[in-house]
Length: 493
Image (tube, rainbow, N blue to C red):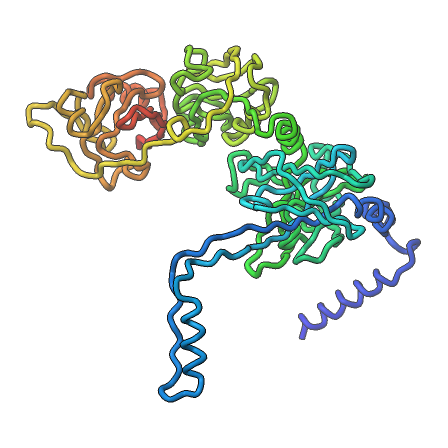
């Protein structure tokens, strides 16, 4: 009963607040932070937002339909025989698949329209439907799968309405925003909400930095604009989280601070031209920060340098922690790929790194990003068995790992390439801290606490020194069979 009464009181209070005159409301409730009406704003923007329909011819899969049989003696037997006789010899039929999305005009004179890549991906025909009912065929100028953006071009037969870019980096959590799009094929739909969060990583690509909004976004809104209250585009609606397929108030938009540079490149070159540093990185964990003597956990740990890349001259080394790039702070690992990609190819930039506990600034000249499996891939092969090395090989056991010198026999046993140097791990105790970090036989210890090791005794001495210094974790640089590097911290307690 007390709960019911309390709820009744709350409902009565809420009703009273809704009916109260403005003079009765608190000062903050009378402010103009939330718009009383967005009709004027929406009216000026609707003509710039378009619906995009695509079609794609999909070939048949070659499977034959089972022939229908009429019951014995059926009067329809002649019909069935004639029907399937006519269809004999027909190959797989093509079928046309259609999809719907949204977009918006950013250059009325040139007929340039922005949308999502997944809206037009694989389309044979792209048609743009305008608010006044007119339709134009569109051609693809360029697309980028990493940010899910695409640029289209139409040939205007009459003046179009365009919308300006806004500054997404100036937006704050709680600011009002408006989405306009084509949900479920219902064109010209306006929804309003707030920015719920910024910098969201939803694991959709390497440069995730989404704006999260509770403005209703549904299927068909993809590629549509997210406006601020000045009528400027501050995001491109791209994704939703929805178990049911409908809006539950969690939508994501690509911020203009990321999108504008990509769109400009697509317009100019028909493709993206991103800066490339040529390093493999991994997160800086609390354990790694402690093992490196860092006072705070931040930056991107360089796990390897790509051969022939921009920094293969020793300017940046494995084990460096990049904390600042071209004047921009690198607070965590995923910040670095984004700020590098946004930098022009060939630009000379200052990179601040922490190397062996000291901060240094190095100058590097960026290359162009190469999207090849050889450069970006990592070795996922593992060997979880024990070794068949000769008994004469001397081994030691440290932190649950059995170690041996890397001999020709060891290289053959684990298929380790000749350019890998260090101490090979021949066995791992399944109950050890090393096993928890997925260290496996065949991994090679190259460095411990940024000091090179070549023998099992070197490893023992480095671990003993770290314990004497009061360190709780040992930072190991491990090499895989083909030389790719990664850093792992192992507890020493």
